Length: 168
Length: 120
Image 1 (cartoon, one colour):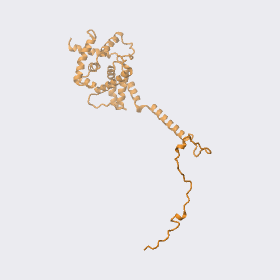
Image 2 (cartoon, helix red, strand yellow; image 1 turned 120 degrees about the vertical axis):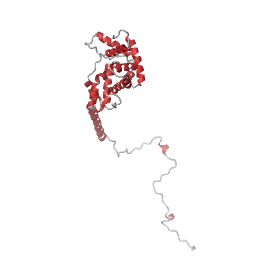
Image 3 (tube, each protein chain N blue to C red; image 1 turned 180 degrees about the horizontal axis):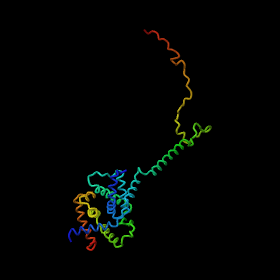
Image 4 (cartoon, rainbow over the protein chains, first blue to last red; image 1 turned 60 degrees about the horizontal axis):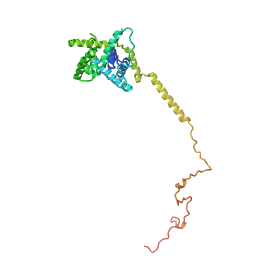
């Protein structure tokens, strides 16, 4: 059994971890949940241990990213390249969400889906999870310079994809 | 447009992308992970142990109760000779079935040799 404080820390970060898992799986909700389960299992079994070299959130997110990458490779092998953005796992539309809102959200996700994985990841970490580029680099397992390059290129590309009228 | 505006747009875009996130409850995900641990599958573990025990008992019963071939029984009155058995026979081999008769006079233990004379 994991120590109670560890469980509490994980529970506190659970919504953010799920959001990050979604970004790592290109908003495939079922896959994101599966990834999170594997992450928790790996922590429970002691295969992933927090060594205090970064913040707990940075460590947890890097575990999520690694597990998601493994799951993606596994699914890719299973589907032999037939996997598409969000294919086959589109969640049921929430009746309380307006159609216009859903369409807007889908449009942004599609734009993000067109970015290379590292650009998408660094933007998600910095702009949604409020991390520094340095922490994002640590989560992604790349150098700071590389993360900065992905960050700047990603910003430019996303703005280009969103167009002038989107979200103004 | 300033860089600050661009960043605000990207921040809004990311928020929009995550607007539809429907996070499953922590308890459901955590419990599923705990159940998936190898040491925490009591039902499956008991099933495996029971099956192994049953297999061991069945193997023991079979070893004890299996029909054994009768020992000490050989067919009598017949002897099958294969068509190629002659190849195993050694030519001119004489098998001694009895002890050959020996000449008692030639046996040094039975008749001691005569004493030799003329010698110092």
